[in-house]
Image (tube, rainbow, N blue to C red; front, side, top):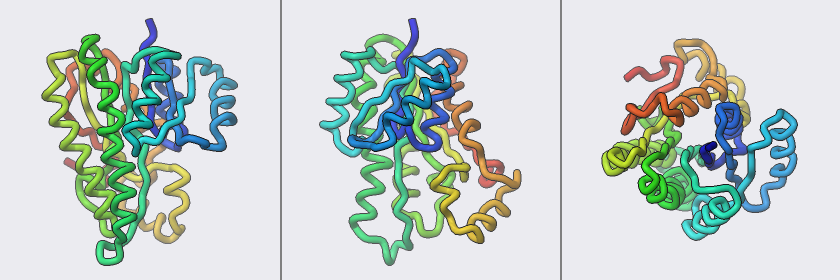
Length: 246
């Protein structure tokens, strides 16, 4: 029987790569997007055109607990209970702390950290009851080392590390693993939008000399979602080209 995987932010740069990789690994994959997301139909058609017919879409706002309750109820009814949860949804609102508004602090913490609670809460009991599950959340290299102008983003991403290590201890005997992945700078539209001179300087500081490809992040996520990774839990795996070694 195929397992059901849910990827939040599944139509973004990294999310799309994760969806594609999990689908190719034999999962039924549900890509979450915001309600009313315009490219939804085109994105889904593109997946199906690639032969990935077990890819579905589910609308829901990860910052809303009620919205996640409704979305999970629909997924469970239409497709089946979620066995693999990949939390990739997130935003940035960068600013030095002295200029950072309360609105931008709250927006980033809600989207990047509180969302992890809102989503994982819907899946974890079912996983534990069935005796198998995978929770994989995307943190960031900047959640580990900090970054100028990202107190909100780094704080939220660091919170994911503590969440992961704590939840892993609670469900390890239930056959559920909980891990996180901390990418460095990845070749996505969001990163490509960085001013060229700034981006060039970032790349110069990466020992491997380039940005990560989304599929490289997806390959690691797919491994953590597999049976082969059953002995890995409560860990954070850095994938940053040597930008930060730990």
